[in-house]
Structures are given as structure tokens and as C-alpha cells.
Image (cartoon, rainbow, N blue to C red; front, side):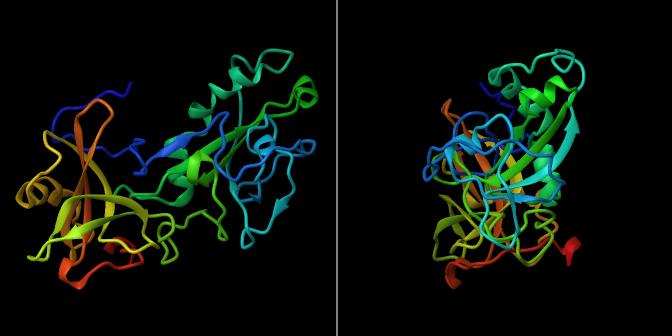
Length: 282
């Protein structure tokens, strides 16, 4: 169970709440559209930035990464975001540990902060759900002393598996091409130019009302007033000076609510597509 912080505590990390901003560390499940076949034999660990098109259950959930690399401008699902060496236990074991043991190390070696750093997310950048996978040496490579770990990142599709993209995710957040990766919301318009404090999470490349600024605050109601939204969220939107302050209240699994601060335009102008960039990024 997640620890619930006190009211008005800034959430500068992601949490899985429906389809809202989060990094999902995936161990042994894959989403819709991922079919079953045997993966090829593992190969030499790929450099950071290498892309792979893994669309099959046995490939995505395999212990070792063995699919051939593809051009990142072509359709692909995962991209190498980091490589590291496993040390300590269980690296000192002669035989490679079971898949279940290795999976428990994924969040430590290939976790949330590492994924956000790879896509170039700054503090006030809200991203769509990302997932990270960890791939390990083959049993034979492990026996020969190889302890290299490959971290791969992808965008979460329907069902939790990776979805296909046609661009590199490396450092994408500071660019105008980041709309697919930035978290936005689709809300109902109010006559006074503001937005209702509830809505659906969508990527910023889809029609939307507001853009997440990665500040999630505990609230006591699912229907905060616009005055409360502005009071609570204004300290976190300074990098977006030409926008309106808005937010979406999301109910958590334990019945509490979290206000996801966001910025948007005048609701009388309707929905928009594309992404706001913080002024610090030009």
C-alpha cells in the first residue's frame, strides 16, 4: 500500500492512478497486442539509446534481451535507457538467480528517477505512464561472470504492455516533439473560462484542456473550488506564466483524493493539442 502524505504535500513523484502520470516498473506482465512466441538468443548488451521492437509476450517478459535492434525512427516499443553492473547479492552467486528474484531488483536498478532522467524530465514536467524493464545476462553469460543489467523504457499501452512509438524517447521532454510523452487532461469547460476539476488523462498529442505540472497534492474533496485549485497549485506553475491554473482531482484506491495540478488555456477557446514548454526551456 502507498503511504498517504499529509494535505498540501507536493507529489514530485508519479503514482499509478488509472491512466495518470506514473512510471510503472514492469516485471512479468505485458499488455494487449503482445503475442506469444519464443525470443531469440540473447546478444551483447546494447548501448544506451538503442531501440527494440518487442511485440511478443515471450520477448517482453524474457529474462534476457535478445531481439535485434531497430532504427528509433521506425516502429519500436522499448529503448535502452541505462546499463549498469549488479553488485553484492545475488551477483555473488555462481548460478543465475530465478526470474522472480531478478524481477524484485528491477525497481532499484531501473526505476522511476532513472526513467524520468532518460526522457529529460525536469521537476515541473508531467509525463505519461512510462514503464521500465530490466534484462539480464543469459545463464551461460552469468556463469562466465557477466553481471551487466540493461534497463529499457517504453510508453505504457492498453493493458500495461509497451505501445509502439516512432521516435527516440531519449531527452524528448525539452523539445517540441514531446506531446506524445507529456501528460495532459481532458476536462469539461465552464462558462467563465475555467475548467471543471475532473477529467480524463490523455497524452498532450490528443485534444486536451490542460497539462500536468508534476505536482500532486492531497485534498479532502473530489470537487475543489477554482479558488482552492489556484491557491494550492499556483506555487508550482511559475514556469508557465501565460497559462491558466487548473487541476484534476483523482480518487485514490483508499478513498482519498489527490489534486493533480495543471495549466491550460481559456476554456471558451475549446480543447487544444500539443504541449506547453516551460519558459526555462524556451
